[in-house]
Length: 315
Image 1 (cartoon, rainbow, N blue to C red):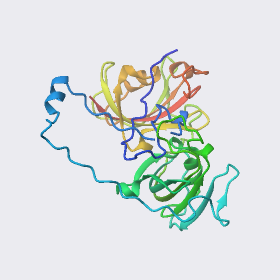
Image 2: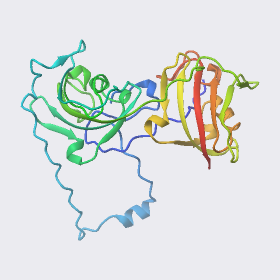
Image 3: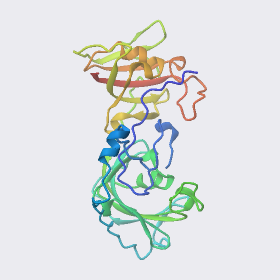
Image 4: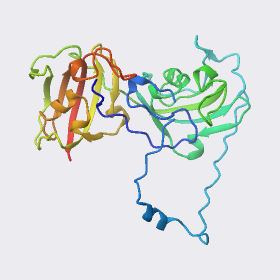
C-alpha cells in the first residue's frame, strides 16, 4: 500500500478556545467532528529560544479577560416553539436571514457564535474574541453539521445540541464541554464547494491517457516551468469520488496547498509533471495510483478519484 497522500488538509488558525472544531484530519472524507488546532510556530534553535526568554525582571504583558456573553434565558432547554429534528437537535430562528440558499455539508461557512453549557456557563465565543470563524461543515460536531445547513446567510439561530451530537455526556477529549450545548450562531457567508464536473465518472472528450492508466485533460494551458520529481509545488485542487462526492478541496478552505511532488499519491506525482505553472488540469486517477479499491488507510477515498488541479507555483 502506498502510504503517500495527496496534500493533507492544512490546520486552521486557532481562534477558538474550545469550540467545536477540533483538530482537522488529513481528509475531509474522514469527517472528524472535533476544534481547529493552531498553526505550528516556526521551530527555533534551543539557543535562540533561550535568548528570547524574558528575564525575571521583565513583566509579561497580561492578556485581557474574554468578554462573557450572557446566556439566553432558555439556555437549559428549548422552548415549545423550537424546531426539533429526528436526531434530537432543536433550533429556533432568532433573526431571519436575507439569503435564499442553504449551505451543504461540503461547503465552508463563516459564522459568529457563542456557546454555553446547560447551566449557562459560556465556554467559547467568536463574538467575545471579536473575529468570525470559518470552517468546513463536515469538519465540526454533528449538531453543527446538521444545524447550520438549516440556515441562510444573515440568519441568527439558537441551537440546543444534545450530548450525542456534540462531545458526549462524558467527553474523552480533555476540556471539552459536557452534555447538551446551546449555541447562538450567525451565518455570515457561505463559501460553496466546487460542483463535480459532468465527466467526473470517466475521462471526457479531449482527455488523454498515459501508459500507467492515468487520464488527464488540460483545462487551462500553463506558461511557466514544469515541476521535476524533486520540486515542491503550490496548488489549488478539488477531489471527487467516481460518484461525484467531494472529499477534499483547498478551494473550500480558501488556502492553496504546498508539498513535494514525490510526497503524494502516484497519480499526482505523475500528473503534476505533465503541467506547467499556471495550468489547470483534470485528472482521472485509477485506484492503483491512488488509495486502492479497499484502502488500508482509515477514511481514505476508494476507487478512481477525479481531481481538478491548478498549478500555481513550482518552488
